[in-house]
Amino acid sequence: GQNIDQPTEMTATEGAIVQINCTYQTSGFNGLFWYQQHAGEAPTFLSYNVLDGLEEKGRFSSFLSRSKGYSYLLLKELQMKDSASYLCAVRDSNYQLIWGAGTKLIIKP
Amino acid sequence: GAVVSQHPSRVICKSGTSVKIECRSLDFQATTMFWYRQFPKQSLMLMATSNEGSKATYEQGVEKDKFLINHASLTLSTLTVTSAHPEDSSFYICSALGRVLGNQPQHFGDGTRLSIL
View (cartoon, rainbow over the protein chains, first blue to last red):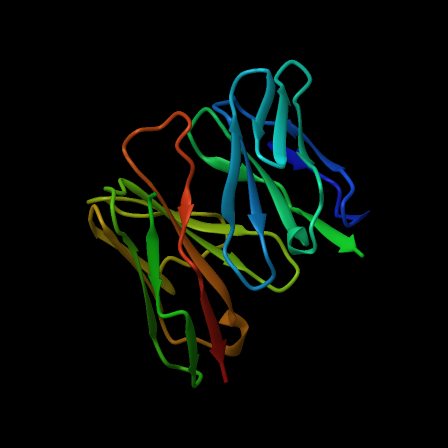
């Protein structure tokens, strides 16, 4: 079956750095996405990786290793507004998005 | 950037009522639209995938006669929850994907919070 694993919850301090990991096992691979979802709101797109390596976008970076079935989202200079759930999703061979359960990130002052 | 508009944002109605939710892609043609449901503190659950001009594909366990999906044009899909009951209360979110795949992400509407009394 298809599976996306990410930690359920993480806690970090304002101003610090946090890395949210995601491992996947899917039928084919056509890219990995990270989304941010604040409580009670719809997800918003953060990043996309299809080739191995690091993609940097401001305070957020996303890394992919296809051979390991592994990705991480790195958040730097954490702000209180970064408190949200972070969803990892993989597009499989049928171009369906397979979703992880999300990682709830709690930022403390 | 691409925008997906979902309406209404909130619905409160009596049990037995049918509720229609609209999802529109505002500046791109959405060949595929996805409907999700999310219960509090749980992950997104895909209900169905619809391609313009064809019948929706429902996920296992989702009743197609209860959750009617219409994707009649490249910019509009509707989800109708028929004869809604309190257990149907949830956060419903649509998502749209245009013709070009690859690195194009799914764009989400703002969601509809449905409360059945």
